[in-house]
Length: 164
Image (cartoon, rainbow, N blue to C red; front, side):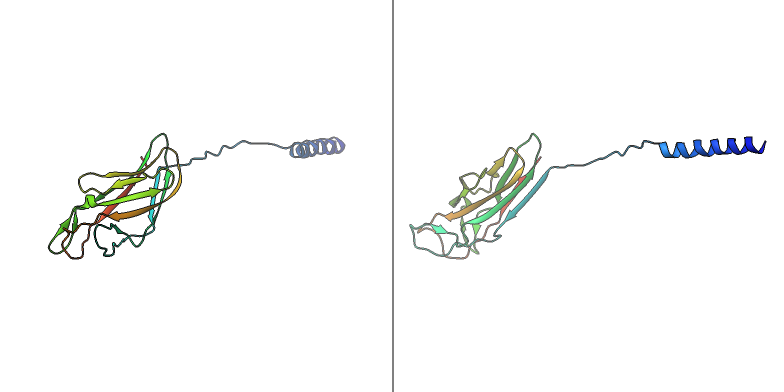
């Protein structure tokens, strides 16, 4: 009887060890989620430009030219756009100069080669159909005139990069 119990115990132990040696398995799933949103990052190399005095008919040229512009966009089946609009004319304490007298030229993939500032409607300054990191340069000019009144003039131009 002891021999039979010993043999049964040995068989049980062998089966137990064999089950462990042959392994057991289980399966568990890991769900991986990722949220990718549209991205629009706009970086201007300068936030102030200056037009030093010059005698007409020579146009004013911004001393900061060219101004670097970097647009980083992540888009999907849409078009990213860069626009600019001014808050009004160039204004001094006693006079104004129409903002349309300020123009630009641009270089770089997707940037509009030339444009004119406006306070009435946003002007297209660039557009991109695919995601990317786009670096360009803008040069700014102010038409000169003997009719301008002396003074220090200011206007604010707001650039907006949109990646819908």
